[in-house]
Length: 203
Image (cartoon, rainbow, N blue to C red):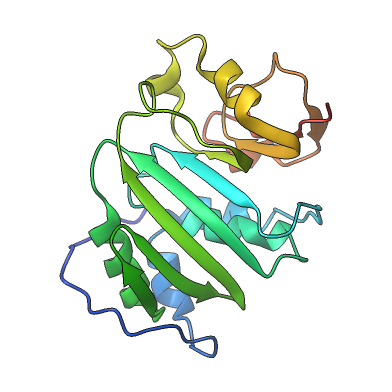
């Protein structure tokens, strides 16, 4: 039986950047379903990406921890920008999660900065509808549990592909099979749909 995940948002005071903080790994694990957390350990890749990349995560909700764990496949990066977009404002929940696991941050409007395993994260949270919003440019597209939402928007994956930079990566648990991507071998167990894809745009 999977564990129950409950996030009780509360006001969190920004305590500033701390590169030497100790992350509570047991608390981190409590924000994942058991099998999901175990499957992440199967991710054993070493991929290149441009310096200071931008990761775009639509329908992110408060899921800050999954993309953070995927950063281990980019051993060379020192900083990265996350652009999260969701119809609900989940930044407060994200700050609560970070505080719970022992990660402190700086804050300015809808942006927070923090360190994760010596990588500087710049997170910009946008409250908007991804299907009507103007898409940014990005180097990494990250998607999780979004298949039902995009199923009625047949042009969506093509639009994402168009905005993805050359040599950029799609990391998704569903879709993108029809687009011109150089697929990288990755365990299908990482997707609840058994369709996990990591693919590089090579044009």
